[in-house]
Image 1 (spheres, rainbow, N blue to C red):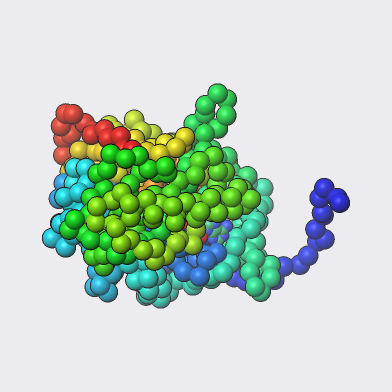
Image 2: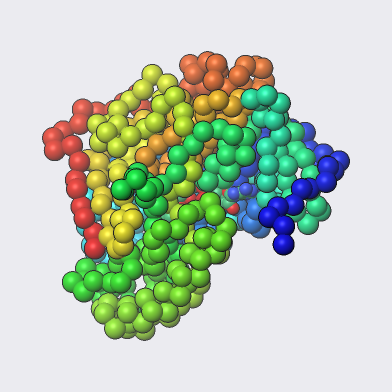
Length: 450
Ligand SMILES: Cc1cc2nc3c(=O)[nH]c(=O)nc-3n(C[C@H](O)[C@H](O)[C@H](O)COP(=O)(O)OP(=O)(O)OC[C@H]3O[C@@H](n4cnc5c(N)ncnc54)[C@H](O)[C@@H]3O)c2cc1C
């Protein structure tokens, strides 16, 4: 049995030649593609699954942590996220925070967070709204397609290789936005990146993984998840869906999985799924109001909080977040605090920001070191664990606009006029921190969950 195989040289047909290519159709990819199209670019969006939404749809992460966007009655993430969620509300598939207390009072009463912090949505409505917004802004979408390699000339990325039912093809683009969550295209292109959540005894610590699932038959008025019995995996995390008796559970957890290794991902998927019937049984026996819980759906992909993140000129750190830092090159705002999932087992360390206050994400954190023509958005930007879905929309909107402007002006992404980008984003309705109030003491709220 040989150790390797040398592929014969092969002429690949060219599938497309576009201004902006967006790889990955999760929250960041949706906003990137729309934003680039709004700025006049011919855009192609490539996604490996059959729908847009990434973790939000295939991964069943069915609620925006909207405290990232709405904080203390102020909305700090606007732009395309607002347009998209308003459309989902019109379609009957989303509840915004101002209506949540009224529509789901049991949720607000049951949680320990300082504000009404989530914005539940129906993942099927999300898929429909995402198809619709692509059509509205004339973004070409290609599903069932994996991006497998970068095409480079020196340090310039000029396109990618894709694989799907039609075989292997090439796509050329003036600019590429990496929204794969795992910085796949950056890694193929040789851009430097980091993984994991720090080091312990010289070994890299991997963030835990979790497969979401949904249960029906819960009684919301009596349901309580403040239990003193410890669960074997994760925390007791239940999130409302559109129906009152159906909830999304984030209650499986497996540690030590490498999110960029297919064999390990497979191991993680099977191990997480195996926990689900056990957790549902635990809920029936231990959670008041969940005695009749019945499994309804399991996510089509395991959730991975932290994977590859690019190295950039600036990395947004926990210190920046807890100090509400603003930057001259701010291109997105966020009010989500620091959320560290215990890499050794159950529980989370949460540092919530004071409601009404937010911090900034600078343009420099989206532009990778060493390679040109490519920019990151979503959970693979240079930052420590700030990527919840509304934030990914915000960085996606910034990266998409930057890619379109840089292609049109024929200026490298790292030399783009940030002033011009900021003006463009403001015209799109993006808030860039112009009205941030003074932060009071104490400056954050620390919570440890079981
Ligand atoms: C356990 C857990 C709980 C969470 N809870 C919440 C929550 O309650 N609320 C919240 O707002 N956020 C939550 N998050 C965070 C949120 O899900 C992610 O941060 C967000 O989905 C990241 O968006 P993204 O677009 O960067 O990446 P993703 O959502 O991961 O999307 C990436 C997309 O790229 C595609 N893709 C990847 N590689 C390729 C490739 N090579 N070729 C083609 N396509 C590719 C994928 O199929 C996917 O559609 C949670 C995350 C985890 C792990």
